[in-house]
Amino acid sequence: MTEEAFHEVLPLAVTMGDPAGIGPEIVARMFLRRPSQRHWIVVGDPLVMHQALTALAPLARLHRIARPAEARFEDGVLNVLVSSECTEPPPIGQISAEGGRAAYAAVVTAIHLAKAGAIRGIVTAPIHKKALAAAGLHYPGHTEILAEQAGGGEVAMMLANEDIRVVLVTIHCSLRDAIQRADCPAQMAAIRLAHTGARALGIERPRIAVAALNPHAGEGGLFGDEETRIIGPAITQARREGIDASGPWSGDTVFMQAREGRFDVVVAQYHDQGLIPVKYMGLAQGVNITLGLPFTRTSPDHGTAFDIAGRGIADSSSLEAAFDYALRLTNGASV
Image 1 (cartoon, rainbow, N blue to C red):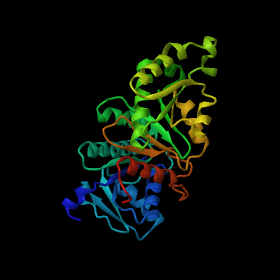
Image 2: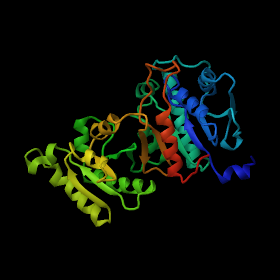
Image 3: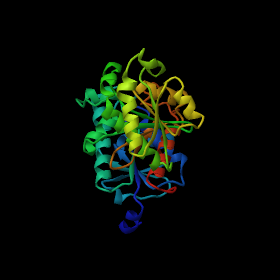
Image 4: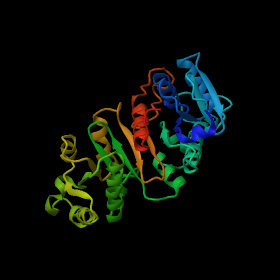
């Protein structure tokens, strides 16, 4: 493929994740499971990815590249854009500073490629927060790294599976802090991003349900006034902007109603309120989409799974679902 032809259809970039977790394995497994889809690259450490790939398919080949245009999209060839070079792979299943640095380098390299227009979007394999901290990188997760590196604008997490889509008002913080942070600007940001994110997925007029913070939506002020003081006014403002938002809906029933088809997206107030309903239905098809970035980013809805890393049993289904969502969001056909 010439460079001219290459740039007609940019590849997706898949980051390897924490080298001690299941990330490299599920990336390699997805590569092997999808021989008809080769137009993507891995961003990561060649030694780590070689170990993961050859453990599953000894005859597969790894092609080191320094930029996406050097990729060879051939059967049996995994293109790895070098973001770090370990002298030896970090110990499988163990938190390490080296692993944290390598995982972070892959993410940041992919972000720079996306901002430069060299790739069509990013799919990230899981990283470990404690490994980042061991490396002196104090980020709660991918979302915060992405937001900072992309320019610090408003971002939100959308969790999606075959049944429901959820956008979070607050993300990685304590419940006490979440209550303080869920102010009117945060509500508006989440509602607007839920609307634009759903439209990017092809929903022409998304129906946005906003979950309450307190039990029974505050029960008329008996259990708190955030619904009338903060959430309700934000919904009213969103409707003035032409967004089909409604609520606040009681958190114990709104996800059921969304699953039954009444709503297209639920805006949840805090991390566990939104993620428990999604993850309860299974991790295999769960996808995390970062809204508000100047490029597409998706990821599987699970962690590094250190307990099963290196055993050859990790399931790549959620990563593959994230890959498919990234294609959908970038208006891509199968590649």
